[in-house]
Length: 212
Ligand code: Z5A
Image 1 (tube, rainbow, N blue to C red):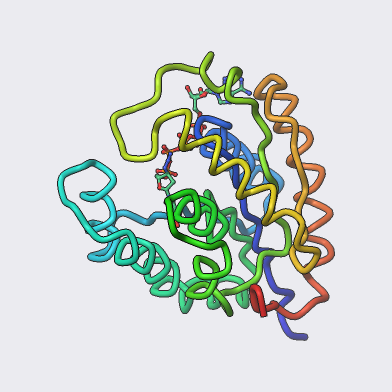
Image 2: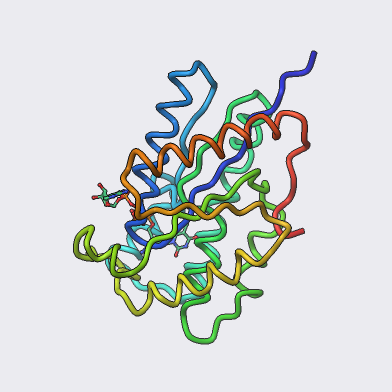
């Protein structure tokens, strides 16, 4: 019998919503249940493309906004063969940010439409579930100062939040809003419930193509 495919599960949200914390907890909990699961994150800063992105985010280099947008997308595309292989082998992937970050962040810059920003990521493996960790700017501020990287300021983050709201109106993607202002454990409980449902459903479905 052919192996059942893994699920592609993405966590999205504004800065400090708890995406990395929750991805790690989710992977750990699923592994403890004996499931095949791995974490990925975007940007994946270890590749040659990822290093260009990282230098840009750290303000060590300047790039045209179009260039960096396409680099973020290329950073996803370069990992598609690996993602597909793992999913086909039955490994569930828990992904910290994906194409939705790409579209939400670049379209928060002046002169960029959401449609233009989505184009380079059309056809990527489509997540079986995207959990959006919802957190108000005031609550995010309580989790510490913004860091030193680009985009880490409250005006920009508000525009990003509005763009996510636009993206969530798209019924072709399975979104689930998670109340990220709860305790880490309570957020985790919500996330694991939705993830288990998604893993069970994905077993029997072909992998889709995003925004196609
Ligand atoms: N970007 C882009 O422009 N285009 C793209 O295509 C992609 C990304 C993929 C870097 O991403 C930047 O790249 C990002 C978007 C842009 N820019 N910004 N801003 P990144 O993933 O490297 O971003 P990050 O800055 O490392 O992560 P983050 O968003 O700031 O944080 P998070 O992962 O959501 O949160 P966390 O690290 O898990 O938690 C933050 C703190 O809150 C930490 O101290 C936790 O202990 C605490 N925390 C977490 N959960 C809770 C709860 N429930 N209660 C209380 N405290 C909590």
